[in-house]
Picture: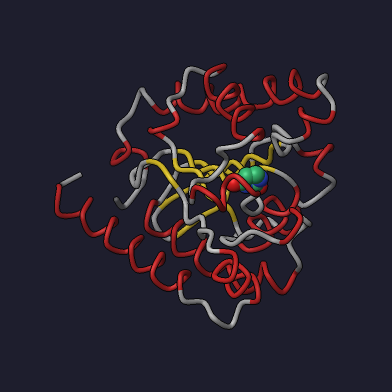
Length: 218
Ligand code: URA
């Protein structure tokens, strides 16, 4: 991709950041300003083949402005290492960009308020694979992108690959457990490792043909 196109993506991401910074209609934004912490927009390659979508920032993330940089992030790093993927080559973000107090689950109204930013990020990055982390992003992404009939309990559909059409090409959606499950139940780490191996398979398969010959407009 040309430098100009990469710069366009960076500029579009910067606009999202400016809008989230000033999202005064959101009580989570007001709370963030009061607490002098940061929104978490996302991090990684703007031309990533794989986009990981979590739930919402936790304490460490709000302090640093970086997604998955605390205990769950260490599990995510371990999972990426397991499939020999470098974190800087993927894009990691959340549906909700500001921290819910006491790390509570995001409310439907919060998802509704912040999800349009995620939709724009997907259209900027144009990932071939969206890996959702946890049930909130699984439900949002599947319902939003034409896979509503496939939605089921996360324990039933984790590690499966669902394909949908976006206007820039086909996208594979892979629901995964949230990495935090391995913090509460060590045994689940093996399940997460097994499930994420499907991403390695997708990467290897795509290597045989360049993106332009696999039906992607960009
Ligand atoms: N949990 C999430 O869902 N996202 C983060 O960024 C950190 C923890």
